[in-house]
Structure formats: C-alpha cells, structure tokens
Length: 240
Image (tube, rainbow, N blue to C red; front, top):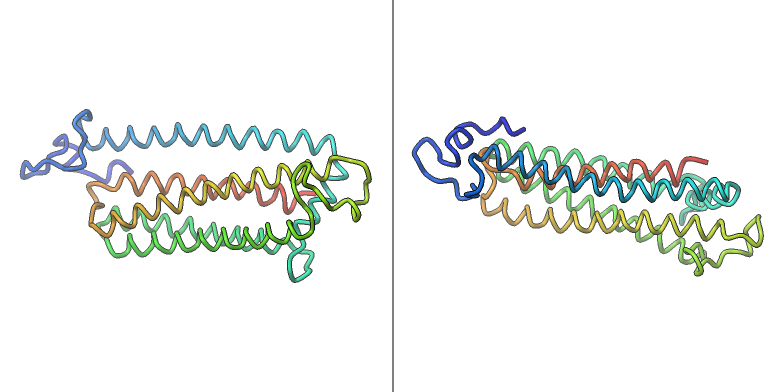
C-alpha cells in the first residue's frame, strides 16, 4: 500500500514544486519511510493484542477441559434470546454487522487513497454506526443474561436450573464469557473513538492519495477487532 505515493516519497516530503508536505515528520527521510514505520508500529501493537487474547483463549480451553459438562450446558444459554429461540441470534447478527463494517472500512481506506473526501467521510460514518449497532445488540444480550442470573464468578445466580449441582463450572464459563466479550467491546469503543477522530480530520480534507496513514492504520486495527470476534463467535456460540 505504501507504493501508492510517488512524488512525495521520492522527494523526501516535498512535491514536484518544492513545497513541503505538512504531514512529513522531520526525522523520516521520505513519506514512504514514515508510512512503513508507522505500519510496523501498528503491527507490533497488534501482536500484543493477539498475545492478550491468545492467553484468554488458552485459559478458556483449560477450564473447558476441567468442566466439560458445565461448559456445554452454559454454552446452550447463549443461544437463548428474548424471542425464546434456540439459535444464537445475537451472536449471528453481530457477526454479520462486523463483517459489513470491515467492508465499509476497506472502502473508506480506498476512498482516502483516491482523493474521494466525501466518500471517505461517508464510509467512516457508516462504520461507526455499525459499531454502535454491535454494542447495542451486545447490551441487549448482556441485559438478558443479567436477568437470568448468568453472571461471572461469585455473582452467578442460576443454580436452581443447573443440571450439575455444586460446581464452579458455570460461573467459570460466564467469567470467561464476560471477560473476553467485554474486553472485545472495549476495543470496539476505542475503535469508535478513533473512527470519529478520522471523520473530523477527513472533513477538514487532511487525507489525500499522498497522506492517508491514519486511515490505513485505524483500518488495520478495526480488521483485527473484527477478526477477534470471528474467533469468539464460534468459541462461545457454536462449539459444543
């Protein structure tokens, strides 16, 4: 993606008329070097995110091995919604919402790369709206779990309907569920903040084919947030 810039890269932050690019930081030789360094930094950050969630996935697997029956039964509760269906409706809708948001984010980056200011703003705003839809659905799902007493750890209060009595397995399952989906939700909130910042800058006309680094980096972050959910959805809602 760094090859999309030409004159600014080859002239160390100056265009063909000798004007200095206001976004070219002095400690980088060229805009291309600045872009590649920024992207490398984002990839390093993403590695730490993968390590964070990777540890939680490992912990979930260990506890599932310890409480196999409880985890299977608790997993069935995630398929229940306000309509009483036995299909993971909330999780499925949120998966579709995030997949669409990934597409709008890609289109937003592409619009920024091709000097389409209005389209950049439009696609970024749609991505924000989809992220808000995701959080609203997650709120409804959480509220339903709270009402049923399906809470984490010592707050678990659903024992009367549990098939396996006197076990910590159910509370452990929902401890991991709320921890991992809640942490993912925080990342979605951070994404909304970053996308809102991009919208303000895009409206000022800050992004062009010569400088779109922030849009590209936030897009990369957003795709990782979506990818994490793609793993969370089958882990909690589909796998028995």
